[in-house]
Length: 289
Ligand SMILES: Cc1cc2nc3c(=O)[nH]c(=O)nc-3n(C[C@H](O)[C@H](O)[C@H](O)COP(=O)(O)OP(=O)(O)OC[C@H]3O[C@@H](n4cnc5c(N)ncnc54)[C@H](O)[C@@H]3O)c2cc1C
Image (cartoon, rainbow, N blue to C red):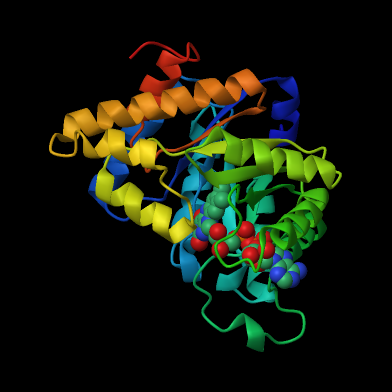
């Protein structure tokens, strides 16, 4: 078996984020997406975890399914705010028994209980889940990085220090999505100055729908730059044109990032891979669609 760290050492990585389906119809769509994306030969697929543990079983099942049936390596997201320490240990042990080696250790956004009132030994921040995953199963552990700073951080410098410490204990990072290459490059520089040597994979969200991306940008604290908004607003009445412009914007961003030297590209697909396939084809990174 191979960890994602070993795969990253082999060269440029292409990866996709998927979420576990809620219905039979969504499952059929996901299977279609997995088949289509496998033409790209992705390095890994990361599978999201519902806030408050809502997808505990579905995330597990999809991760195990991909491990058994698909050519790509799965990475299971896990959210420490959703569970007690004992539950997290159970989830990690179950992954280990199923032969899963890669975990994305996250805090999550909607804790069931206030983090201020946690009992001794319960996990408050993602860094503690990194340590737990290493302890329980010697997993390859990734962490989240926020190029523009975490939306709840008191200030950027403090946020960067916490992130540097977390990344030092983990194996690599995947970033929140962003639209300006300089935000990613600033993050990489800041972390390098704090001693980081681990890969930081930029997360790319192709705009395919104005409402969805605006909502997600607001939730994640990502800025939609004026230039991006102008290009999208100019075609807002035509959904096909929005998608086309969204693919162009993401292609330009990826090209700039590749030029500056990156370990790979991670696509937030929302289980719809057409835009990702088009961007990769535009960049000469995959089969033409
Ligand atoms: C690639 C990626 C994938 C994601 N997938 C999911 C998912 O599947 N499910 C989901 O629910 N959410 C997901 N998220 C969202 C994520 O859970 C949120 O962004 C969450 O608010 C922060 O998670 P974190 O792991 O970065 O937390 P942390 O690293 O714990 O940081 C959270 C905040 O706490 C601060 N902090 C960190 N350490 C300390 C400390 N020791 N003392 C004081 N403050 C500290 C940080 O500066 C930051 O402001 C994802 C995000 C990314 C970037």
